[in-house]
Image (cartoon, rainbow, N blue to C red; front, side, top):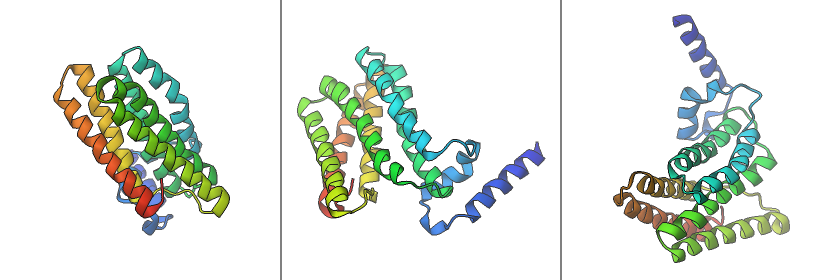
Length: 209
């Protein structure tokens, strides 16, 4: 067992040394130590992004059928895959133009599906319209800048914080309805409103998604 552990740590250390540490986030470094080594080399970042796309209809089905506990589990896996594919791409030097374009699109579709079904049902139609409207505008402006101005699609820190807040908000909402904990509905609402603030910052200040 000690030999296996030593090989695991040596392999992880080697992988980190072959990448420029300046390009890695704190999350990248943690995941590279704890989680990423269990992913075989044939699992690429784009494959993880595809998982998020494929999971969308299943997430929607569970929400529509009010199977909220199972929907919570799948949603958390799908949302967490956003951190995994980005970290895989940066730590393994597998960043692609496809990933830059479709990774944020997969995130927005996942959040959009959850907001459309759940937020309209349990919180507020106006809140759902605001979130979806801002996300659509972010997508449209980003792809316009890429096609017309040649500016690459990139997510700044505010956009990443927004995604985390949105995921935590939807997760809190699902906890509330799965376990009958109304306090988590209030938490979900505050998290989603805070996510709107970061979405506006992302759009106005950084002009990113």
